[in-house]
Length: 96
Image (cartoon, rainbow, N blue to C red; front, side):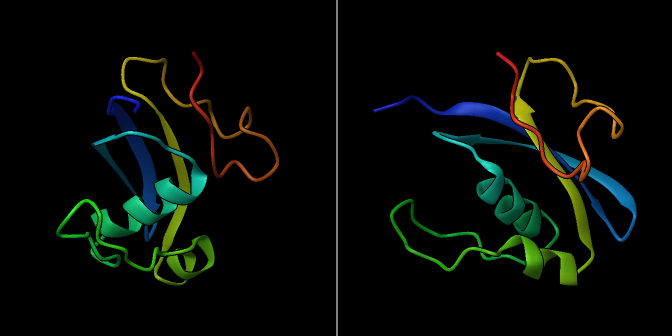
């Protein structure tokens, strides 16, 4: 069983930059979009670790004004600039 890691999630809510730290066992782009939605007050945070909830998808989050979600492992270098992040500039993966 992997041990939880600290991740930093950066995103924009109605063009205002937001950032937070979360401890999870695994992170991917779908998880980052869901947790950014939770931080913005849109998604549901499960009360128990095993509770199954419907996650907020990227298209749904974008309807509520969330954009440019990126994530990285805490302690790693900062997220790349938008011009370095590729065409979409929306998501990044941690550099180890």
